[in-house]
Image (cartoon, rainbow, N blue to C red; front, side, top):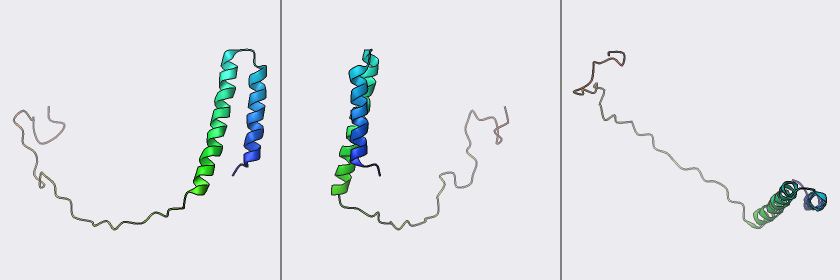
Length: 87
């Protein structure tokens, strides 16, 4: 895991870049990076406070599949035949 200090250093680097950038697009990119770095710190701190939940396994019953066609071909009025290649 990346330390909070390292993330703050990267935020400072992005802030310095935003201060010295010549165009608005570069400033927006730097500020977006700072926002993303803030989210990383905030989300990782929230997860530390949450209790760890272990997933539980569920028993799945395996019932035989019942086909609506019951093994018989489907007969339709406008069908050409039993094969998909009958035209």
